[in-house]
Length: 304
Image (cartoon, rainbow, N blue to C red; front, top):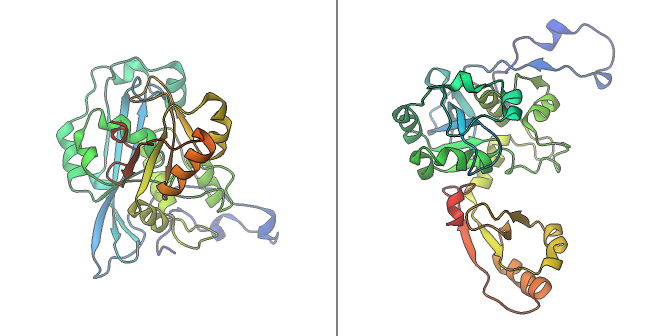
């Protein structure tokens, strides 16, 4: 539970009704505070919430048009979010190497004319990231490869993801989209702007998960510290694709680095390799695995 809320008005200022609260829900606009909790004498570290807008959704082809970084401080022992350093935030646009797609422009409101001749100062980005202990994005599998194309500093810091670190379905949420998660928690915001998305992601980190009764940030940090393993089902028989998909495997397209392969991430790779040999290959083969930690998780570098 945070000491300070991200609402401009209390419920009592807006609603005056005797109707049971089980029959209605109040959705308020997100107003991120300057801090969620007061600082104590405990050790404090620095985090960054990151979001990008791009010319489209294709990693490797599409390019960054907007980058936003929102720094915050958190207490190491408790995981409480302390200060939100809005005065140190970064929000910039850049002219991409490919045109903005019509769909991306409609979603973000950013046009090719708006980014013409715009650049992002790499030194400003590097200064912020070099002082950061953890980078967080709502879909880090997309954001990390996009930013690592331009700024090497993102390769040398741990990453975490609010989209994939939490079992949202298990917690009772039917969708893991940031806008819908916010609505379920009782707030809305103007989405598809990189900085607004950063504020929403930080607000989400401060929320408490209904089943686990822990903050999103605490569960995310726990997930980030655990290693898992990339397992590639090289040359898996075509007729086994349904079984692979059912067991959590995803297809990496041929146009991506070392693609055209079914893959998954597991905590126990030995158990998974035994399953592959028995159910997919029907014999023992040498299956490649790669250890994944917060330093390379969500990065295309795990495919090198």
